Length: 409
Image (cartoon, rainbow, N blue to C red):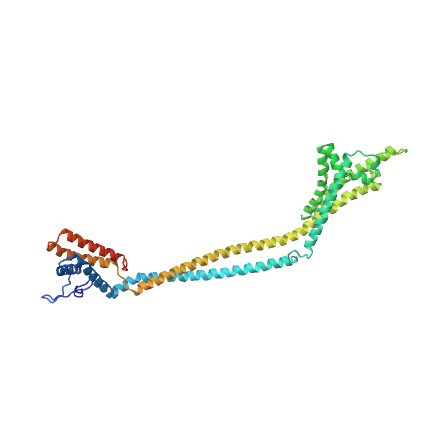
């Protein structure tokens, strides 16, 4: 097959002198039609020769487009712009990565710092409490308060039963026997549920004194001392009644067994009896002590709780920082992934930038013009419709092949 070098390709012109010596610009599309007509005539429009002719024409078209430096430069502008945009995105991503890494480093340092502080607090809690023996004081006070609570429960349950329900006998003239009754709860249960409930709940009255002393002591102003004084006096009066009731019962037992005339018990006479003050001190003084010990234990607990609260707050901050670190690492990974994808796209575009930019439409239009000339010849020489359809199919298949080739859309 002849080369297409003698063909006036798209973008080229042929200057034909006229009578007035002005050039005549030939129609490019008409030229490709003429070329197709001429080539068909040389091979008698053979279908077997059509495909090689189309390939030769396609090569010439590509060479013509590649030689057009101005057009190639214009077509590469969008590609260069894409590269510039991607490089800008990568620069922004790099800044984001740098910023995220700085934030990550800062938070990791904070986590390490807080972890060291927690270890130091655990080793030296007095840095928070200001008391080297706060923990020991708390546990000693807890043991004492537990024993005092058990004592007060036993004492007041027995004392309440003896004062309100017990029928004294001659054997109960001893103060210990009169106050402490090992079977007080079981006897109260036999006597009735209400009696049992009373002797079980009376100790709570006196234990509540200690709790309220602690709560009032937390208040500010002189009013707290008035409240505490009123509370102590009220519970002392209750304790006084129980003590007087027990002493009176003991006195009446002695009175009934005496051969001498004894006067009725009075408050002034109760004040003169040792048993009366023994009951007062065995109850009233102990629950006052219980109140002060309870206040002491709660104070020490607050110190320890301050340590625990400080540690928990620092652990909470560590947890928050760890979540932020996780988010920052994910953010860095996303930016790294995007950056790598952009780099891959940039490399791909740079390869395209170094090559020749040819669009399918560039080739398709001129191939169609070439085939128009080819068909013109076939019709002129009376080729059958079957032969025309065969050549048309060859042309269509060729166009499909160049659309799926490396020619860019």
